[in-house]
Image 1 (cartoon, rainbow, N blue to C red):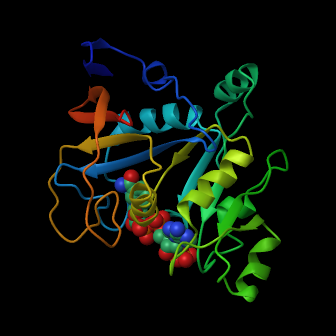
Image 2 (cartoon, rainbow, N blue to C red):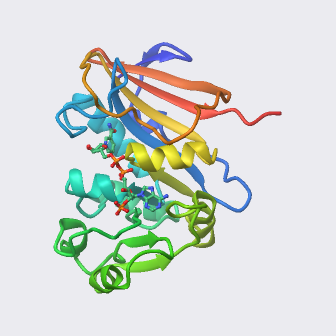
Length: 253
Ligand SMILES: NC(=O)c1ccc[n+]([C@@H]2O[C@H](COP(=O)([O-])OP(=O)(O)OC[C@H]3O[C@@H](n4cnc5c(N)ncnc54)[C@H](OP(=O)(O)O)[C@@H]3O)[C@@H](O)[C@H]2O)c1
């Protein structure tokens, strides 16, 4: 992979994404990991798969390697048939040597708990890792809770006004669990909630040189007006014409 900014040259993605991520007070560092087409689509044919290619898979592994938790919305779990989050053997050994858990904890955010208990992320467990943590608001129906509590650790969190889990309550809960770096893998609805609450510190964005048109969602969407906030480029890399852009929220006054 080739780095374009800040200094041109060859770079290993594992090295590029092993950045220092200072933990904000009372919550983890939150990094969003997403892929988009050049015209901003987060899906092609209802999936993210066609976006990003080989370089994206390398970046995906590099970002997951630094994660204490991988957080994902229920829509993405359903649409992308999520499986358990497991580090490759060498990565797991490196993590343990650095004082981390061998694998990131998988956290699913859901309102209705329309999740299949037989889905891979629940069913394909090897007994060495804790079950996924599934967080939901108080309004979640009791029957749905009963179906999922056998295969996951269920945690009820306060709701944002008239909506799902309060994003501040979510990050505070992850902080209480000593999860220092949280990687949010989407989808666009969960990202939109987190961006609106301004709790996203980093965006790892793959930009595929593809123009797709159509009605696909952007990488983050939520009701209400967009808000202009300051972000800075930490690096920009390239492989096979695909761009890998790492941006960090600039919280200086
Ligand atoms: N380009 C990429 O990198 C990328 C990455 C991920 C996903 N995607 C694509 O995005 C599409 C899915 O989009 P999406 O917006 O539906 O995904 P999503 O954000 O993963 O899922 C939305 C669902 O997540 C739950 N949710 C989100 N915020 C919540 C909150 N604050 N409290 C409680 N529950 C909350 C709700 O689940 P319930 O319905 O259970 O209440 C909601 O219906 C798929 O096509 C997927 O392939 C693309």
